[in-house]
Image (cartoon, rainbow, N blue to C red):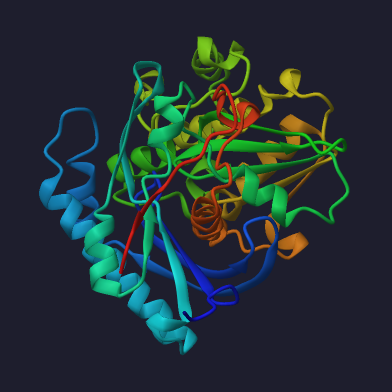
Length: 358
């Protein structure tokens, strides 16, 4: 039997922003990160994004979207392998997150579409998927799921630090000086602002924060948006992409709405501070939000500490979540926990993932 321990692991992530698929290669023993390899982004067309948006929510028929999504992921794998000059036989495992279409852990429900058998067949590579359902079934929040990867990456970084991921939803990983790890969703990320931009400007995002910079934050509306029970709940806790809405900003101008939503994302993340064992002096930001200078400045104003993109410590913020699911696929194969009581509120370290043979 071929020794695969030094082969690549390939991770795939389609996040709640629904802007495309991130694909990344790493080498790992399931405990540490041995090498970070090439990455690739597969952008969704307007039609592809619309197909996914149409199946968001509970009780939707996802059959056609699931097959299409899986085939898009196959294309992303092929493009990454071509870019890296690798063959399928060079990859030991694929970690396939799929697309979250509904998440309500209080009712024991989380749904990620993506056909693991089909992807394994198309790629000729074993696939691990269905990472979250075991955690939710055991009473966990089912999110966030990248903290153990953040912990592995940050082995040599002085702590405490915070890793903040701003995708469609924002989530944090707190890494303590005592080796502790605490994680949770913190509130909306780019999702509300992206929806606002699509409605008022026919754009998928506020590129460079230019629209928000031209508007004014409505402090009364901001206070109303922050007056939610979620922010007083102790972590771990999680959110669905649509647990918050743009209703409070509907009466504002398009520019003021963008400014207020940007301020809301920053302020929501600061609401986690009272729940932390120590206040981190450094926040490292990953996800699409780190590209928005207005949002980054708002975070610095709220947090009063260093807030920098993860690239400042040599990580790749565009690929981090995809890398995380490659790492989690390896942990699943080795029978190691994917989530902890302090990351998802699961009662005890939880195993998960479903293996699909090539």
